[in-house]
Length: 395
Image (tube, rainbow, N blue to C red; front, top):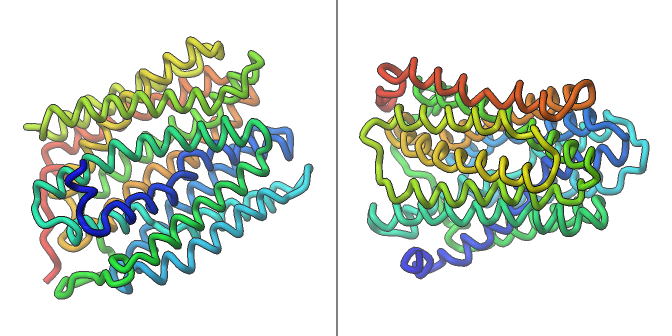
């Protein structure tokens, strides 16, 4: 890790990208809590969180394609202020605000948010001169981003949000704006240009059948993530411990971080689809159990175990994308899998909120958490076809 961050410009770029991504671990949950305070409904909170997630998921591939064709600076410098402004609008809406206004502002915040993670990944080959060092960079990024996603709920939700969700929303806007603009001001980002000589078409990364399969897989996985963002605060609320929501989701991230470090030591899989299917089955079964109890000790343990399925799933899928993405579309391919999980999160938050209000957090998680099991079945069905095939560049 030290060798990676000693590369000229690497440390400043990576830190800026982490600051910009800090709100991403907290904003979905914060939208649920803030909207519930404004409207009194977790279901409406789920709709607001879902609107943000689905807008983010739809816009990111388009913005990433614009980066691939025009460079990083324009997208970062235009998108960050727009997204930050929409979040500030959310923070200043009065109690009893119309759901339409909340959902519209949340959607703008998601749609304008630049894909800074994809921008960072596109720069590692510029910063590092060997495949071994780039592999170390990707492993380091995966581990440290779990820390970012742990700190987001802890600092923004459990810390600032326990005092005021309005101020927590404003903090998200500040982190996003400062991080993205600092990243865009770095000379390495400003001077980066796409590789010449790659033929492009309208389908881009979606031309790869394996990419399309992984999008479906992450839609199914996202159902449980969206459900967690609604069911966990609701379960804690029922026992009088809603102020521990950020801590609970921090434990979820700790489980993922530890498992990510462990799977990194296993090395590359001999049979990548099989490893991915196992991780997905574990994801589904573990997340289905979340919500059984709202008592902090039990819920924290359940989230720790569920989190341990997340990083192995992403590590396995991301490693497969190197061979599955059509030539010249890898960055876009990464954003499409993010889109898949964002769509799943949106559906999971909306459906989960309705089930929580009508029944209970436990039923919401039992119903939506098993999406990972369905995803595992999809992977096994596609293992000998789309998930084995490499797609050539268009002539």
